[in-house]
Every structure is written in structure tokens, then in C-alpha cells.
Length: 326
View 1 (cartoon, one colour):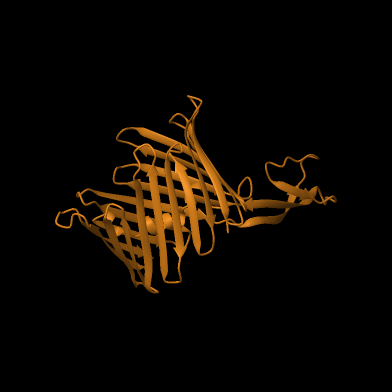
View 2 (cartoon, rainbow, N blue to C red):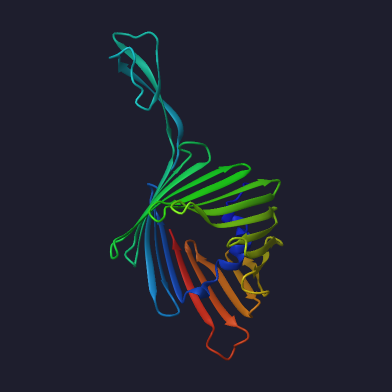
């Protein structure tokens, strides 16, 4: 199993506790489409329980890597010391009529370009390059622009992954600048990681966190200390069988008191095209969700949230989601 990023050490339990609960929005719509030339479009829209609406239009182009290739060309020799110009080549030793054969070697790496535009009139662009300088290294350059406020943003992110290591570095080039780095090492399912934030102008560490975990094919467990080691959380996930999943998370903030927050969730796959989820926390708030594939490419999600301690009050929420994927 590959080593996860620091934020994904407790991913299995976090996904079970947070994903696919549709009551968070009154209504949500997502439309996805793909073109033959590796361009994917996504349109999302949400309506909150307070009546506010938001939307996003995103286009993503992916140039898949092709590996190392070579091509044989006949070239005219103009100098006994030809310049490479950034391309590796070999020349035959026996030129014929001032010509020689050249073998050109080149590598086409994977590139992803993502452009998004939302209803707040914010423009975001991200370029991803993978395995360009080293195997397992991904480079991300992103920029944002908000015309209304003439606000600009520029970020540089680095991801480096090896069989027993996963490191990341995030640089905000215009604010601060600041840097956030994290790293995880793993061996035989055991994981240990740390994260830190650094302000370049102040030359000071602004935040730090640590985590340990264990990952097995059917279950995961982790303990995380965040917010300068002041907020502790323990998470557990168990895939009981092909139909049932269960998980729990306990959180304690050492600065706010002795009370421990607890969440428990379970997922049950009803059949190959539908599943149901339920969760409840220590405050008595329960959430239910149902997801069904109506037909290939069309998914319906229904959700509800109930405050079991205030059943006679209007604190409950319901929501629906439609996803179209072509």
C-alpha cells in the first residue's frame, strides 16, 4: 500500500463521516462531461438552506504521458561541435555528403491544465506537471484573480512520493510569503507524519501538527494532534464485509475544556447501485443519506439531518443532489 499524504492519514474514516451526506445543501447539481481529446468539463451549483446560491464552471485538460521515445533524422553538419539545445542526441560517426543520422530522444510527461470560474466572478488556473524532473515528483502552479477587488493570488505546490515516503510543500508567493510543509513515512502499514507552517517575513514557525496511524486492507486507525498540538483526534475505520463499513472519530480540544466530541457512522450497500449511510454525534444530531444510481451516468442523493434533542423545533435539514456524468 502506498504512503498517504499527511492530510489523508485518516481519510477512510473522514470520508465515511463527511462524504455523501446531502443535507448540508438544500439542493445540489453536478454535471460532468468528457471529450475525446482529454478535456473534462464540470458544472456545479448549490443552494444553501439560507437561500444563497453558488456555482462553478471548470474545464480540465490532461495531456497523458507517453514515456521516452526516439526518432531517427538525417541532419546537415554545420559545425564539428553541434549544440544540443536541450535535446539528447547521437550522431553516426560516418557522415555521408556532409550529412549524418541523428537519434533524438525525448520524454513527454503528463500535464494537466485546470481553469475554473465561479459565480463570485473568481478565476482560478492550475497547471500540474508530473514526473518532469524526478520520478514521483509533481509540480503545481496555481493563480487566482478576483476582478471586483483586483485581488490576485499565486501558489506553488510540490508533491514527492516514494514507496515509503510522501512529502508536500505549499508556498503562497504573494501573501507573506508563507510555506506549509508536511511529510509522512510508512513501513508495513505503520505511518508517522508531521506538518508545519512557516512565515518567511517573520522567520517564524506559525503552526505545527503531528500524526501516527496504521493502515491494513480492512481497517485503519490514526491519532492526530493539530493546532500546535492542542487539538487531539482519534479515528477508526473498519470494512466489516463487502456490504458494511463502520467508523468513529473522537476529538478533544485541550484549550476549550474536558469534553470530548464523538461521531459514529456506518455505511450499508443495499445492492450494486445504491447505498445508505447514517451517523450520529455526542450532541444527538443524526444524519441519514441515500445514494442510488438511477441509470448509467445519473446519480440521485437524498439526505436529512435531525436533532434528536429538539424534535419539536425547526432545526432539522433535508437536501437532495443530482449528478450527471457523461
